[in-house]
Image (cartoon, rainbow, N blue to C red; front, side):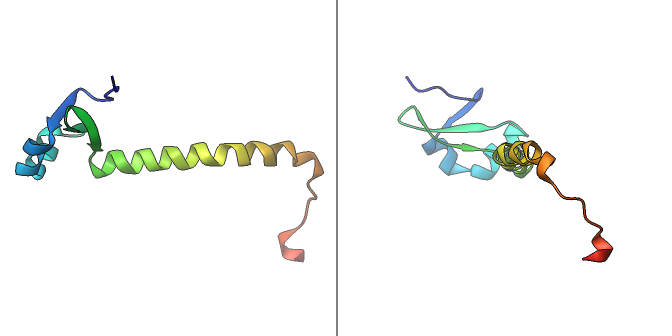
Length: 83
């Protein structure tokens, strides 16, 4: 059995009838669109998508940040005006 990560679901057939209505009625909650009772995709509003992308970027940058912070002892101080 596949996990569904939202309380709101709709069949693909019903979704196709009026996707704008589904988005409007969902508000800011994600909707799982089901194909044969399995999630085909999740529909989210633009604000939620933007937040997810920002969090993904932050998670991808964290290891780089930690690696650079670990190398901080090797850093050389410079004056930007002297460059």
